[in-house]
Image (cartoon, rainbow, N blue to C red; front, side, top):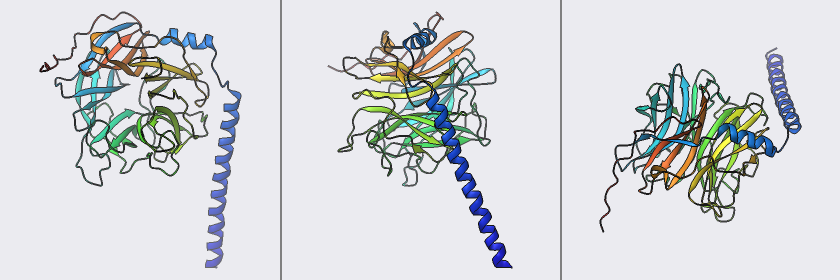
Length: 387
């Protein structure tokens, strides 16, 4: 009798496994069919329309800058909670990156609240002890929408690149996942995975990301264009022959639970073969996905600048060939103007970016689609170099 029960239980388990497997294959097949029905490219007319919608010709100026020349502020991510806006951003202290939180009522005046991912003890167990560069995940992607962070399994989520070594993006940098069941608009340490979810040393690493992994963004694609509900875009560099630092490119990974990630395809989705193509961030305008990203040190270009690409299926991307969205033009961004985060609120487009001046001071600036005046935030006077 016991043997019969065990056999019956085994058969039930096998049936459940086969059913789940069949359902998974059916879901992927359905997603592939839907994706195949979508255009692989975006027309020039549509791209021009997107540019006209998202362009921000009026530079308001700096909105966040540190009061210490030894610190650098970087990589804004903006979300809305209730009637307030919040921004996660990075501060580099010389030791590495930590992730901070700021708050605003109007998207122009910001108050720093505190750290949400801090340095930890440099033990072998803390793979991310000296680098915790965080970016919000699973935000409502609708252009002009709520900009709220969506919950999955009762938690809010962030991705981050972390590392053990001290210094500016030194050592092996890998991608980790953080989450919290607390209010994301309050200052508290987020819970982090005890291991990376993507590394340059993974067995299935690709030729373009086998050296260092950098910034990433994660969307919740409920239509499952790739057959998976969570899609990560990240930039990395690599070299298929000697694993030395090469050009940075943007590629994809997918997941069904936010914790286990698999590279999607063997090639990047954006590749300029030289310099940097990085810091992807997505929003959806109508039925079109728009990826904001920055370029730097491309052939026949200078400095760093923000651009965009568009896709119907999240896999095939058409790049904008016209003017940069943001480029250097002011004393506070005369070295680099890069790393986008763009929102539309009450008819105004706000394009947040990292501004770097020739004294190598870094802060968060914003440009807008309408003239909003000028910011009173400035970098502190840089130190005088001795002759």
